Length: 178
Image (cartoon, rainbow, N blue to C red; front, top):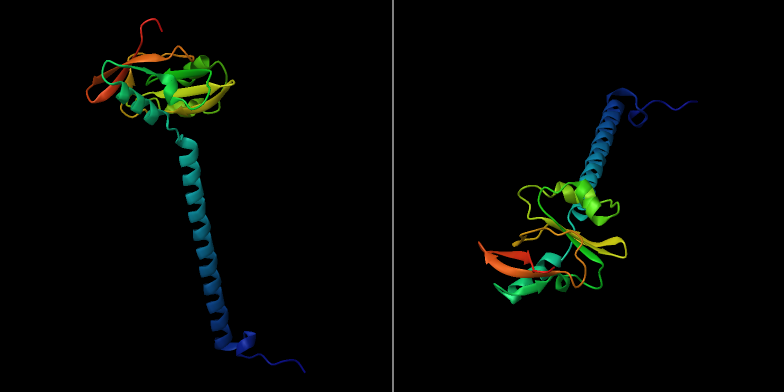
């Protein structure tokens, strides 16, 4: 004898209601999971953008502190703001394009476009520090520091700047003979 259809076997109005309720809960569960997955993807993408897009460098703060300590009319060496040994430091003015950055560096670098994209007319400029033929530090948030010229390829012993206070900003001018 075969079992008789009943409410728990999908026959009649009670069985249809059970299937409809299960379908609703299934759709709600899938939708909830989809929303959570999309939200997590947005969070991960945001974190990746911030980490890849914004360099974490203390160079501008160290340079500003050294320039402020030197005072108006004083001298500051760029090297005091660079941690550890270094081979070259490059300064890039607003509007510098990626080709000029790579030409200055003398090698291809995967973040050239990223730095160039931040060198708009409103940007204060950018810096790149090279050690052993590789970029050791870089950034474009120079804060209240400006330069009268933007030298490419400063080397240790060749990085002295005169400090001037102009419009509540530090203006660094390459020292004579440098």
